[in-house]
Length: 210
Image (cartoon, rainbow, N blue to C red; front, side, top):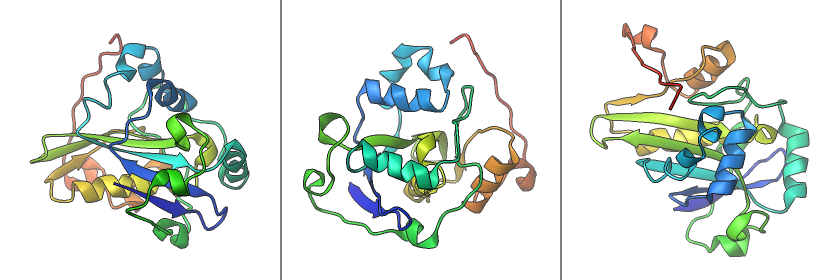
């Protein structure tokens, strides 16, 4: 499944596709762009994270690199975040309503509608969301990341919304992210609540050596 969305501010086309795995090189570049060294310091992880995921969606900017640079001039919020984290999002949600709805197309050949700039005839990889789930009672949004040059373009919210729609019938959809006011505001604007708002408490164990 795939479709195209048009950013009304830049007229840039972004292709969203479910289950189309990027190659390891471009996937590593995307994770490195947001400083997720917990993945990139262990190259062996990059070969298995998508294969071990229950569901994932990619976002690609159609056209040549100049399109990405043009989009960055209009949408960039600066450098990416540091550290290995579970999710990275825009510093604040500034998504145009028209951009959120966008223009979509289904059932066409992407090679006929999306000028190539990335590997294997696809546009440049600019975003990814991936979920780990038992497809019954719980789903974990493990990673949500967007190339820093494309922050504030609605890419992250569209990816997250697609994941939430995919697992709409699951009892618990969860994610773990930094305790940052802007990040929290983004997730709340997407319809999620923090555990303290549900009278819950969470526990976790990290093994940073692995």
